Image (cartoon, rainbow, N blue to C red; front, side):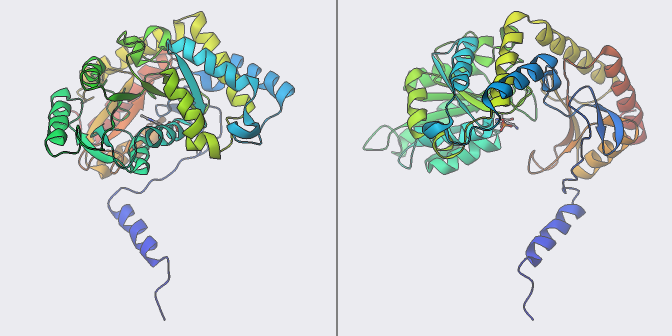
Length: 402
Ligand code: PMP
């Protein structure tokens, strides 16, 4: 008898389990918030990207309900056929104004925004310069584009310059037909919480006349005045050609967007494949995002609270003796090293009432497993103290701290 067609998958799955790399997916039985019901148990939430607590905010819920009464739920079409409602255009106008960009186009997710944008801007004769720690959706978008992908060292503009010089030298740039280049970086790196040196990347891109794209998924609603994002944080309005965003994190909904140069946005309406071939964002999603922009434009209170919480938590974790890496944002990696230790740490936290997921290879490099704590404006000081007490206890029990 021949081996089963799926035997190789069974073998791979058991190997993942042996290495401590198997994803055990927990299930929520409550709305997002500082506290969740996870696998039937009430626990403190340190895992979600619900930075501002908007995922279950009454204003967003009310807006979604009201819009559904008027427009129904689903778009039932792709944007370019019958899926563009006036609500979609309003969201795009509002997002562009919020971020101080010329124009904006929305997608079904941040992932889809990256898959749409990179192949629309570069093709097989072109070169992409990509930070080595860029998000999976940038990597996949780059592969779809078919362009040559040149990785430069993480957050290192000198390495970027050297990579450009090498490509010029070997003839891939600057002569003959090959000739477009795109520099791409995450804005905030999602696993480490460090921020890209955007002013220097802008400088390089301007000197070389290359397009520059930044993925601000973890900067939106977090960085800049009242959460206007990384371009606002550095005062680089109109100097970054393409700003990818997500409505799935700080906005608490789901969706993606591309803000930036009006010509690029117009081109994406013609050539962004997820725009042309996958249905539009749903009505409640769009309406909730509009209510999110209202909230952020009215007050910086939620963003201020997020940062106050993040500063407090990170400082206390350092005092407890944990290594929280190079984070400059509310993303707080708790570095543990080997994946089995991170998984054990996560299980013990859970037993102590705290939901903090272990992250290992391939999401981060081997030997760099961690618990990634996501701080939110929804946490109270008391919540953070409860979380810190659990980290202190488990850290000692597992010999991570003294
Ligand atoms: N880019 C980055 C940097 C991200 O961290 C993520 C989410 N993990 C995405 C894009 C994808 O966003 P979405 O969840 O909206 O698809």
